[in-house]
Image 1 (tube, rainbow, N blue to C red):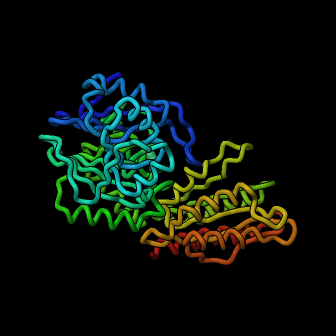
Image 2 (image 1 turned 135 degrees about the vertical axis):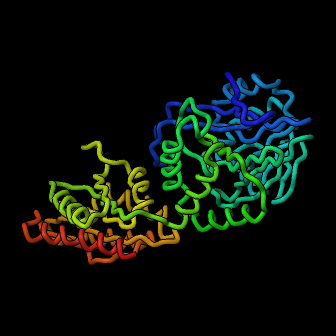
Image 3 (image 1 turned 90 degrees about the vertical axis):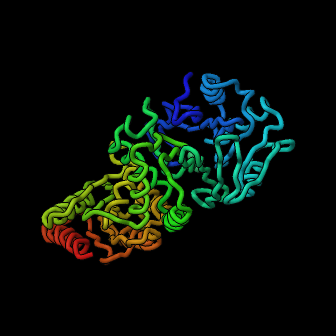
Length: 404
Ligand code: FEO
């Protein structure tokens, strides 16, 4: 096991989870749990990994120093993918000081038996002098949990923001310039789309606060994925743009179908969008019959789209379960919290009273999307006139987003 040097006395000592493919409803090509060792006259371990990865983290630490030389642990975030190794580390290093926020202290006690743990609560602006390396703490509540905290290493201008700016990817690359900026941004966009969107206003506020501190940030070392050493400014700018809802003239159409009629409508709408010169993604939801597109990839497409169209046949007076699941996921992400509002509408086929399109539009409104058209429903199979109407709906949506 080898560590990776970020700067003299600063090493990545994390774990690579090559085989993880889903994480609370989000598909991913593996991930990493990044932990860091900062060595001045004293040594600090920042963050950890899931339980089960203790040996890998300790192995990497041993390539730098004896784990017995660690003087303290910084817990930026208590979610188990970062704190899971903590009980084993405390058992190995009894009475080691653990620096975290008050919310983290309370949260750790709900996860583990912390009786006897030497927890030291810190607040924004407090520092920890390691002798030649100085850590400054910055509370970041709800970025993305109440306990979250950023840690800044002044001498090397490295920010350790835990989940913020992270990406789920398992790779031999440790740095952005090794994986490639474009690939790193793709993974970061999916991470933001699936985890950070509902927190967008807090992201903008926190970035303002960090900017106001006047600190130099040369490197951003998150708790997942690659470390931003060549493109730290680019990921900071991307977070601002994504939080503001900066999007392309692009429409995402997401749907499922029972017998192909809603597919016909989706394709006709897409033709109308393309006829107006706008970009479009047509995403049949993954449901076991088709490879389709997983909901976590659909919301990634939605992040930089100005419009979202949802299609569902009516099944027993309800939205099809695949679409209902997607709408629940979208509602939770609340894209309406992005500064710029997205527009949307719904469509679908039915064989009885219909209703799915109306319900889907209510869900879009609940997600903060501005609905611009009444639910477009057809009985059974769309005829030529109805396909023409679908085409015109696509044109109207494209014209609308271009005008914004
Ligand atoms: Fe990567 Fe919120 O844990």
